[in-house]
Length: 133
Image 1 (tube, rainbow, N blue to C red):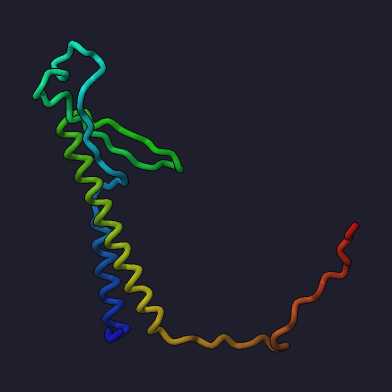
Image 2 (image 1 turned 180 degrees about the vertical axis):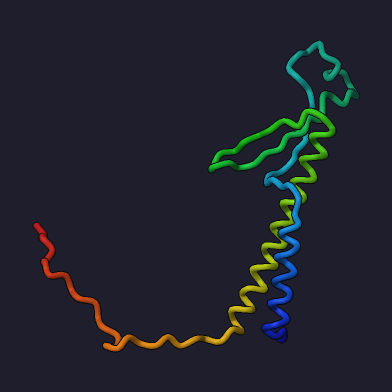
C-alpha cells in the first residue's frame, strides 16, 4: 500500500470513468455445435464429410435457469461476441475497482463516534419468560 489516498482516489475515478463508457454487454458463453444428424442417408454420414454446422449458441443463466439462444447469422454471432467481450471487460474493471476501494478503506482514518449522553446501555431482557412445555 505505497499509494497515497489521493492517488488511489484518482485511480478509482479513472476506473469508474472506464465503466461508464462501456457499451452493450451480456453475460454468457458462446459455443459451437455440429456433427452428424439422425438421418442415415444424409451426406454427414459419408466418410470424410465434416457434418453439419457449426451452429453457434449463447448460453447464460437467468434467474437461476440456463437459457440458450441460437445465433442464426454471422452478424448475430459477431454482435454476441462483442457483447460478451464487453461483459468480461466489465468484470475485470469491477475487480480492479474493488481492489482499489479496499486499499482506500484500509488507508482512510477511523472516525470516532461520540457516545450518547447516557453512555452505552445494555439491552433490556425480555419481560416474559419463554413458555416451554
